[in-house]
Length: 612
Ligand code: AGP
Image 1 (cartoon, rainbow, N blue to C red):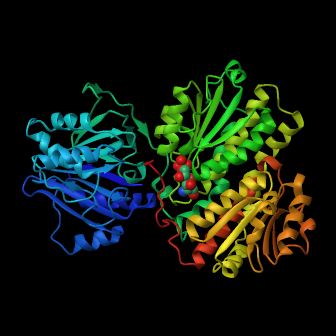
Image 2: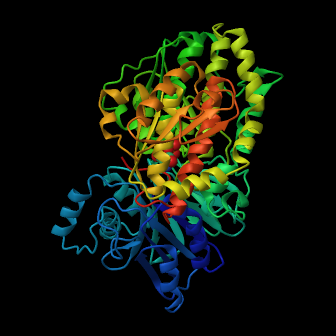
Image 3: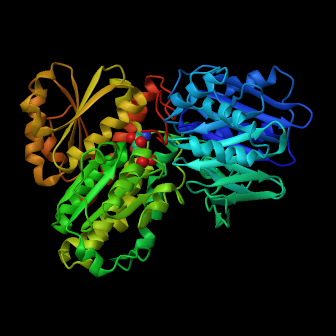
């Protein structure tokens, strides 16, 4: 979604802003802009539709924007089409304030109407512009900018991360947050603000996360934070541990490819602190045995790929725990009168920790008395902070819009948590526990083996890139895995694909299988291999071409049946999707590459979806 970066210090602001925006490009955007303020020249703004390089070209062709205080924005359109005028920053009618905004101002129409009646002329079709115009209007009654900001915030409904520049206060930035992330960066004689740490990590690792209702005033001398009643707030500082190189491509052609290849290491980071001497340990969790015993059902709540993690998790957790597990799309959850109560364990899964749908579901579940456990990658993110307990995946920054290493680590972590909980409740089968934990130790190494040779995926990409449609089929854990394979393909290659429980084909979908249809058949789940084989025969006999994914020990069963067979190492069934997902990611990657798609930044998609 939209990205924000702000700077105040002694260096020229524009290069700092552009570099920060570059690091935010991965979030997905359709236009970009910067604004600076200086005593001599007041507010100066440049913005345009398109990629950052278009903005750079525009800036290069004009006299430089001079100023050491400024803000930048990458926009992902919600209200108003992507064009130059709708891009941020937005400036008020008389040029007194410039603002950037992430989120949605829900009552913007009402505010706009009010201001139109006062004679204010609007330029854009956005909800965000009302903030700039309302601020200037409030300056009539408030000479102190902070007074005006509080007066505006009082009238706003919806979600916002706002950063404001005032022409007559060229020494400072003002920021406000509600339901959209903002973090403050503390430098030496300079201060930063950003929607995401990647934008400022090159300058400072000393950060603090803004909370809902807070307002911050940034000057080069430091940062003051106030709560919603304007009382000063002492912020807790955090140190960003990961290195800036983790957010760079490091010689790989795409972030997505880099992140696919990083999965073995990411899994080590997830697994090793929680697996000691063959025993699972979650020292970070404040859950007592009594609390664990109190849960009579589990909800797995998430969106997109994180939801697919939940789909795999349901099979594993129900097997380990013998408790009912419900997987819920976060965007549906709060509108479905969920039956959550104090006996419910609600596990919210999110890479970014900022997905608005997931956050809203979390709050709904919390309000109903559920215990919230978050599985999150981004440290200090909103979901992590609002949950009762958090498990971090420790996968490092994920930049490509299509998730890969976050999915893998979420999956491993959820399986580990389920097994750990089963052991604590005395429900774990001893042999199973020993087998899964032994395989967890081996998992990163086995995944390295899967990733060692990408030749077959490259070849399949060249064979199948021009197809119109692909079907993924599988049963049980393979069905859940197919959902993710299909989403990966759709997201980055724009190729239509469907994922079906293989047994469901004959209930309708098989009518779409005709000579030449491509079917990716997932056949890694040993307990149902004969049924998987029957389903492959079923589609083959209707002329489908089949790429089958199976394990080394099951490969013999598929001999002479599929068009191509890929065999991956065997592991415990509960962990098999962790190895199975990598071929599907690579398949999607090479198809998208052949189709000339913008792999890291697929059209219309954003890395962190902070609107409903
Ligand atoms: C995955 O490749 C997608 N980009 C998307 O489905 C994503 O998983 C979803 O938006 C949820 O994001 P989150 O994990 O950050 O909450």
